[in-house]
Length: 480
Image (cartoon, helix red, strand yellow):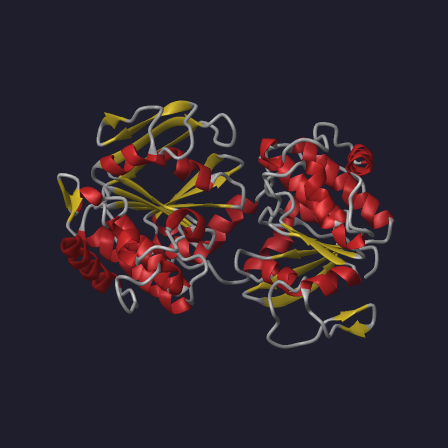
C-alpha cells in the first residue's frame, strides 16, 4: 500500500533478494504478473522501472571507489538532469544540504568513496537510491553493515519517507528491526509466501516459527568424527575493525562450520587467518608453530593454509587464462625445476585432478571464463587441492552453482576429509548446508563468536534461532 513499510522476512534462500531483483528488472520472472498503480507492468527493463519510480538498494555495494561521494550520487540521478554538462559546485552544495538534512555530518561531497568505512558506504548506497525520488523503494538487507550512528539515520530516513507517502519494501534478517519499522510483514519460506501479517501483537517468536515451520527440528548431521589432534589454534584474534577477540580450535580432519548473518565477519575472519587482511592482535598457531602477525597469503599457502574465496570471478580465478595456469598458479614448485616449468608434467597433473573432481571441459587450453559456474567452482577447488593443503578455508563454496554441482561439491568435501587429514573451515549462509556437512558449528554475530554447536545440537532450527535472537547491543528506537 502507498506510504507503508512492508517487510519481507525468511531464512537464507527463501527468495527475498530474488523477489526484489525481479521487481527492479535485474532478474527475469518465469511466470505471473506485477501490477503498479493499478496497471500491469509490461516492460521490465531496469531503466524503465526506474523511470516509473521503482528504485532499490541491494546487499552488494555498487559504488565506484575511484569517484567522490558527489560523483557517485550524481551518477544515480543523471537521467533526471537536462543538458550535457554538470555544475559540480551546485551538485556538491545540494548533496551536502541533503546529507545534512539526514543528520550525516561525517561524509563530505568531495570525499573519495574509497576513504569511507563499510557502514558509511552502506548508508551512501541507500541515499543514492533515495535521491532518485522513488515512489517504491526496495531496501535489501540495508542494516547488515550499519554502525549505530548510521542505523539511527536510516530509521529517521524511513520515517521521513513514510511521511512523504513513499512505499518501502524492507528486507532484513533482524526481526527486532522488522517489528520496529514495519506496517505489514510478509513471511517467505522455501521460495513460497507463507503469510502476510499486520504488525499488531507480533513478536520475534511468532515470526521465527513462521519462517522455519516444522523443518530443521531433526538432526541432519551424519558423519561420525572423533576429534584427536589440534591443527589450528586461534587466540583472542582481532583486526581492529570488524573482528572482536575471537578464539577457537580446529582439529585434523574436521569440518568446522562457520555461519551467521551477512556482515557478521565470517569472510573477514577467514581472510585474516589466511593473511589477506591484517591481524591487529591475537595469535595463530599451526601445528604448534606461531604464525607471524604480518603473515602474507603466499606464506600461508607455503605453510598449508589455502583460502577459496566467495567471489571466484574477482578473487579466485584468472578468467582470461587457461585451465592449467589457473590450477597450478599457487604451487609452481610442484611442476618446476630450477625455475623452468615442465608443461607436460603440469598437464598430466591437472588432467588427473580434473578427472577426480569431475570437471567438464574440452581442453586444458580452454579459458576459465568459458566454463559453467559449477565447473569454474570445481577448477577453484582444483587450484586449492594442487597445493595439498593442511587447512582449506571454503567461503560460500556452492554460491551460484546448480543443485547437481552442489551435490558434487559436497561429495568432494567429504572425500577430501575422509581420504586425508585435511581440515576444513566451511563458511556458508545456507543453514541446511552447514548442518549437512559440519562436525562442529560456530555462529558469528557482529564480529564475534556467540555460540558453538556439536553433535545432535546441529540442526536448522537451533542455529537459525541463535543468530536471529535479539542483538546484544541496544537498538536505536524511533517511533513510526
